Image (cartoon, rainbow, N blue to C red; front, side, top):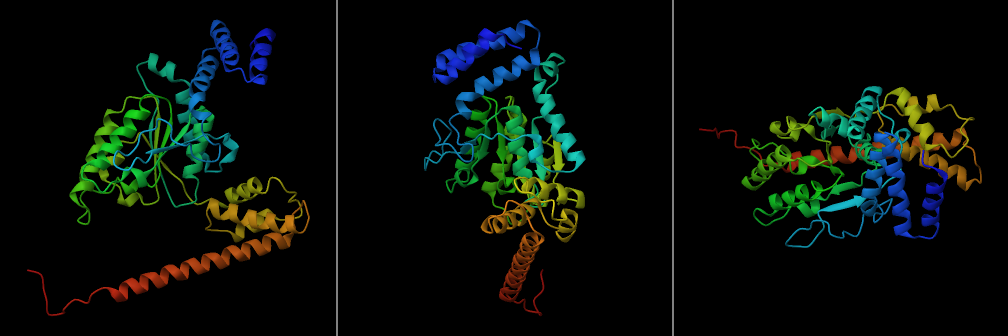
Length: 354
């Protein structure tokens, strides 16, 4: 641990908002840890300090204003949004197997130098798949936070262009940019650009985009961690699956995980008067985001009644509201499918293919 003088200098620099003094003290702390052969700690501190200029510009709850981020050449839109979070592992509830895999990947990146010395690299191309609301985006933000990397969200609304060849060019700009630093790069809704090239419904431009994506992933040599996420894994091109070094399924929470999620989301309230196991059983088939919404609805009831504790009625009403919303969505989707089916042109029964 750094000595008292270095810590005083560090805190003085922070208190005075003196960036040069703060960085000088931080550099001295890193050198001191290296001298003690605390390599992992020193590397972590160095990475945090190096990434600080990027992360500090980011809103902890949203996107940055762009800065020198890569942009779409035709419209000038930034191709990435950069966010910074302060999450820990306890912020996410997933299966034990998934948690172990995620922690193993983070450990590899923490020990990058050790792996490189053995001519190995940490896994850095991951695919998250599963239903919406089951923690894929949250897991990416937790990984970024634990690694002290900025989270770079790829903006497909800016990437995809109507101009011939410009979508592929935008992808190249993103890969070139993130290859120069240490990021967790998150491709949400990855199926938007990674669709199966053999599908008869896809045009030549999208096939060229997938080809470019395959080339970029094969050629990537940066230190960033690339994470793609999809709710529609069946739509992905088969060649893309082989580019990922780890494929992780995010499933709907089990009975035990539903209770853990309720405890997590209700952490600011006394819930000892409520049987969370019973509530969790009534939420069978729900996602993590569904459970968060139920918890928020229950918490609102308690706050409006000027209580710091939850009553059974709070969660009863919240679960009933969730079921009502779910039923409305289900019926709306059924109506849409019925309407689409009725509008489909009828085939002439006497017509046959030749």
